[in-house]
Image 1 (cartoon, protein in one colour):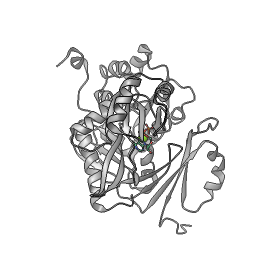
Image 2: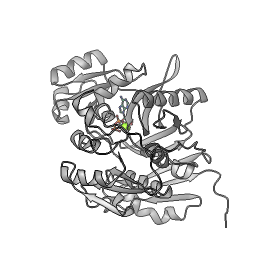
Image 3: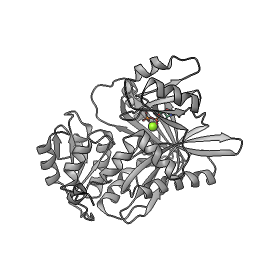
Length: 375
Ligand SMILES: Nc1ncnc2c1ncn2[C@@H]1O[C@H](COP(=O)(O)OP(=O)(O)O)[C@@H](O)[C@H]1O
Ligand SMILES: [Mg+2]
């Protein structure tokens, strides 16, 4: 055991109604986590540096401070019974300060793997799970070497801080790779073979402290401008492939000794031998492709996460029917009144400020078979 590990509060968490969960991050995911906790009689306190955090609106106590503010982190930790997060880029130093005072779930060590695309891919590969071919790239010369091994087209991605397609670029035959490297503006990246996938899917998995795993039905995801636009559950894949996808997510959760909800994004690639699954990335948190579970299943991903970190039994979610979730991005939020009139639609508005292009402002869920008149 290292000196740091000796400092970590590792006690088993078992919350009671009325106890308080600390959430790092104040976006829509934190907001929906707090709302799910409230239904179970649990309180939340949100820590976020952004005064306009949508999660602040739904909790009594908010801490608005920087993640480097040690005193604010300590006060926050002292006020809560367990700490979780809604985004994967929690600074390591902040996670350590908090973990010395309260249990942090999922474990902060998981962040080291999932914050770095190279460490994440190495981890998945070690489990014997397929990914796109990839290579570590740190200079124009290593990029050229990686291209000669992996071939083109390929995708170059910064190892850290990428989201919604930011921090990545396609490289095609004839492109000026020195120029692409310069534009990427980093010293650490990975090159991935471009996967001509048939479809993109994801699995939202929950794992409890006792090691029980529950996966939601596999979701199929459609991106527009690299941003998730539509999720459908169940994915239009065979039962065998769906079972394989859930198995991959469960294996990853177990290997990470994960407690909480995680999402695994995957490609379905069809080649001569038939369809196969390649893991694209792991999100150590609730995920946009699981928003359909709020209205489309008996238990949502948010509730599953709260149950897991509270030390409560996981739910056995039942899907209510085929579900479609549509993100309202940027100006699309201005049409919310039209969505409110769509029969069977459930509208979620995140209460964010002005719509900016590419900003996720809300979503709408439609469950088939729920369109019958109820009044
Ligand atoms: N190797 C690849 N082959 C084909 N498409 C890819 C590849 N990597 C990423 N993409 C596309 O870009 C999207 C975003 O990439 P991803 O690695 O998930 O980054 P992030 O979601 O963090 O921006 C993916 O959902 C997929 O549509
Ligand atoms: Mg992604």
